[in-house]
Length: 387
Image 1 (spheres, one colour):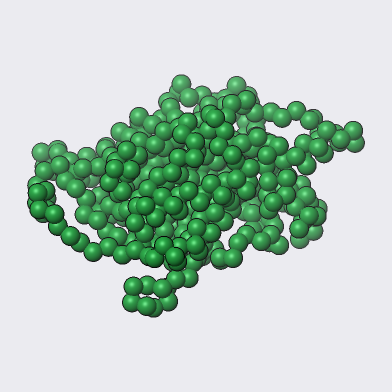
Image 2 (image 1 turned 180 degrees about the vertical axis):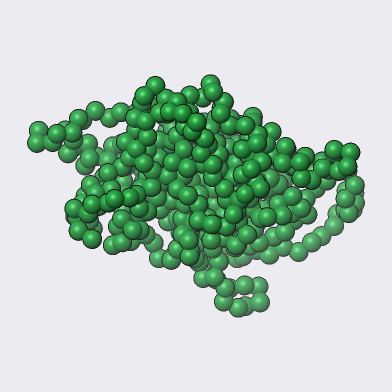
């Protein structure tokens, strides 16, 4: 592919820049969070007219999430945002819910949607739901392109997302909760990536583990954008301001800080404290692209492991006696062997953000505002010159 590549469609980072080094670990088959065995995802955009550009992304840690929870942890790089259920994750080290990503004005409806699903499909004959769970709903702000006062998302969208979640590759760009999001002043949204990390299981056998990342990217200034270590944003600004350029130099977009939500899934057997260490490493990938956790940015990262199947707590009844400590076996890895997972999180986060930018398309939304997609031809030309 030459520097003047004419891209007739949006492509992911690896297709755009096959020469770019993206870390020592290979991606999974789909290069998506759904490469982690058992993880299911669904995205739905809600765009009834030009003014409404929003949506919802649903992540199931496992198909039988209603019966079994998993170990999880959260890291807040900058806490100007919301993630419901986070107190219980920090308290118990477990994830007891699907993970829902949407816009900030839809948190309540999304929260209700998880309970609506539980009531519709898991209630007793009397209509009770014997479940001790806290819906995990998290958000970034899409109000520049989406008229939030329309409250377009309903609980039914979340019910549908839980029902239809699949192991297919996650649609990227202007999809799901990322439909109306903006990243580094370009059209942003949903992105995903994965890495395969060779390891050893508890029996001493070789085993390939998977680390997957999904981002909802809605942060950053144009001048801070880096791809492959190249300051693409500053170069694009400089070229636009050149006397020979026919492009307008103005940087359009909202003048408020944005946010990014990063979800990390793995089948490596990890304890909550180890998962928090994994979640922290997402910061490395974010910083490579140009995020630094500005004051108004909600940069919240959640990591979970599917390795352990932990019985869900019930509101009443159940098989366990609350006053009799009862042991069960869970696996973990030696801390001395965790570096590969750290690298995988950083690399997959960087690539997932770039995939969101590369796959997003120009959008005209609320009040006729337009946010341009990243010019992939220019990105290829700029980066390949400097590799």
